[in-house]
Length: 183
Image 1 (cartoon, helix red, strand yellow):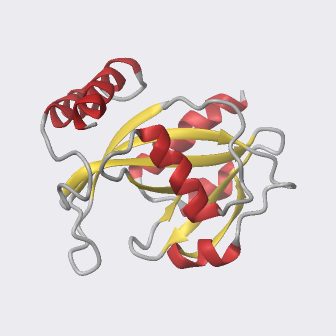
Image 2 (image 1 turned 45 degrees about the vertical axis):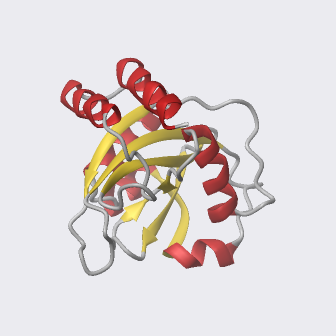
């Protein structure tokens, strides 16, 4: 599976939006072995899934417990998984079984997150694959008990409010990509 994952990640680096320097680093990291947190706890690949409501022009974000930042949902790719499988698993783990992704999703952004939080996380670098998930906020009903495991609070925010809360550069880049989807 790691050869399949490696080839897929290198292909993503060529095709998906992101700064050239980031895409080069992403591709170089994909050439290495130990691509998942199970194999390399300090530097590995992750998926983010950014929920947005195109009709109401709002995003679903949360105040993350470990990082202390306002972020979209996401998680690590597990050993033996492809990114789309990690996306589906993480959606179930963070939003619950009642949230079913409809349609097919392709990654839309690549980022690299440097993490300097040694007391709470072994991770030092996340190579992030971003998926943007259109949802209707009025029918979106994630399981609160699951969200509470990772977030102090969560909610739908209009873009101006989200921009005030979000301090993480990569999350702001994702917000820029979502804003383009609104136009």
